[in-house]
Length: 334
Ligand code: ATP
Ligand code: LTN
Image 1 (cartoon, rainbow, N blue to C red):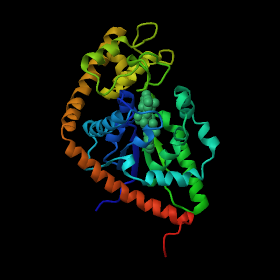
Image 2: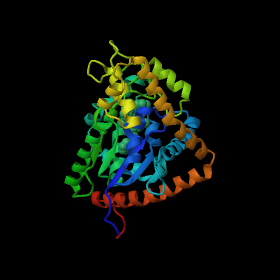
Image 3: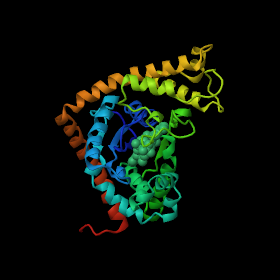
Image 4: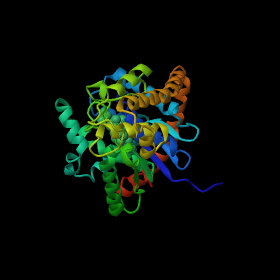
């Protein structure tokens, strides 16, 4: 048999329609890394309830995200795919790690500050503790690598800090993981309506994002409307955030480099370029949408994938958690 592969963990929240930002920053890498690593991917529903969710929508989004993972090319025969709330060890390890975390470490997190401002009427303890739950997700599986978008970098730093803190206090227990963030601009896809802001599924303006379920006309219309910069040259540059963002998106879907794209559109204006990006993205999304629709009709299959994933994930998680409980001194019978 071959040698054991290193473990990889990541998750996406079922908090709404998945955007092409989530795809480029995270899911695309989930697919690309599945042969190199032992991959474990979760639908992070425990994380999702840190902001208000409509229960029926959360249930539907969970199933849809599972179908989307598979439709994008994650192979349930190669990877463990599960729903976070199905494995109680995530909450159990969070409790222990909370006792090693300082409130100041959590209150200064950028995401906590942004989300507190955005949901001022619902600043709850879960929102503040969100990063510790994320740390638990990762450490339970002894993951060495965690593919995420650039916005999650701070949470990965906390993960490393807490792993080291626990190991120092109680002896070597956790693998200290590394973030795997796409190189260049793919790590942070910006809003099509305001290229100074991250593309976000919770944006009030739907023209800012393209979702993985947008139909062809919607995708093309949103790209046609995308805010570009002064001038008309298709070139990636710091003073051209709108065009640079479109180049990053086009590059992610075609595999072309920025230089190749600049050459391809030399002498052509923004209009031609925006249409090409829209058509390329729409062409890429169509087969994923068809496969997702097919999978959603086969609920028994999806439930089976989740059940198998839950069992496989729980087995690994339980092993780590027992070790943790033993190290902190919880009596486990003699
Ligand atoms: P929200 O947009 O509501 O703040 P989110 O999309 O950031 O939520 P998740 O669904 O949990 O939150 O994100 C899943 C993954 O997608 C994470 O790895 C995150 O870093 C990545 N991601 C999110 N937005 C972008 C973006 N605009 N560009 C690149 N990666 C992104
Ligand atoms: N917080 C992440 C989603 C997430 C995650 C994780 C990512 C939850 N648990 C563990 C990597 C590893 C986000 O992208 N908003």
